[in-house]
Amino acid sequence: MNIAVIFAGGVGSRMHSKERPKQFLEMYNKPIIIHTLEHFEKHKDIDAIVVVRINGWIQYLKDLLYKFRIEKVKSVVPGGTTGQLSIYNGLKAAKEIAGNEKSIVLIHDGVRPLMSDGTL
Image: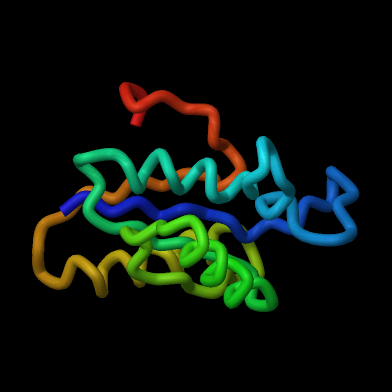
């Protein structure tokens, strides 16, 4: 099983984004996180996706997943107090999804949507 853990726990403090975290800023009429997730959603070798998100925005993200029909996301988990702890939370969720099945986990930053299928 191939599981993508998408790290989207930042708030965009360097971008001075006051209305919403940077991953929810729109680019070409879609939030940046959706552009990123669509690459994984459409890729034939990705079986499941875990998104790590800051607590206050989890329901907002779930609403976007529904709106944009992102169906491979099997878990949205809260981040930790550091990036390292957030990724750890994502890895624990990936382990739950995989169960005892041997798996490959890809970790990717949610605000990096500019990638090719070949790179993925």
